[in-house]
Image 1 (cartoon, helix red, strand yellow):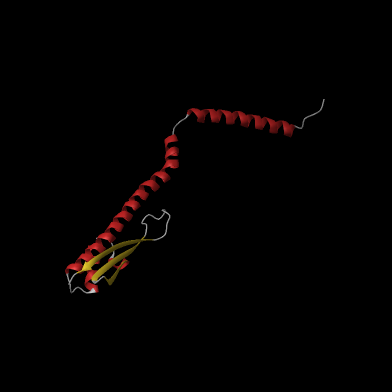
Image 2 (cartoon, rainbow, N blue to C red):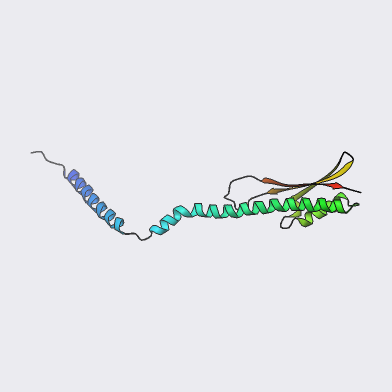
Amino acid sequence: MSRIDPNIRGLAGAIARGLRAGRSVLAKCRNDCRGISAVEFAFVAPFLFMAVFGMFEAGRLYWINNTMQFAAEEAARYGMVHETASNADITNAATSEAVGVNPADMAVTISSDTVSGVSYLTVTTTYQFDFLVPFLPGDLITLTGHSRVPRVF
């Protein structure tokens, strides 16, 4: 009969005891459901928050886009009604109508052209939109408003 080294026998016994203990721990965990909702929330929360903040930013983007269009239309209307309005007056009209937008970040371009004897005034407003929520991807988005009206005087 061969002799087994006592160190190996002790190691095999320790492994067997560890496996039996591991099975009992797994059996206990299988029946214990405490904390599972916290784990599920940890998996779902980043996507939920990204969707909520993404909707918030999309709404802000559309709002500022509509504000740029409204400011261009109102400035062009001001230039059409006030015959002696200068470019500075029209620019001031555009920036005063851009509610919620920093006027320093807004650019107003005014041009005039004549087609078939009719003089037209064109007002273009631009704004560089930046997301407030830092984890949303994307660079600056250029939002523009454009309006062209006849000048009859």
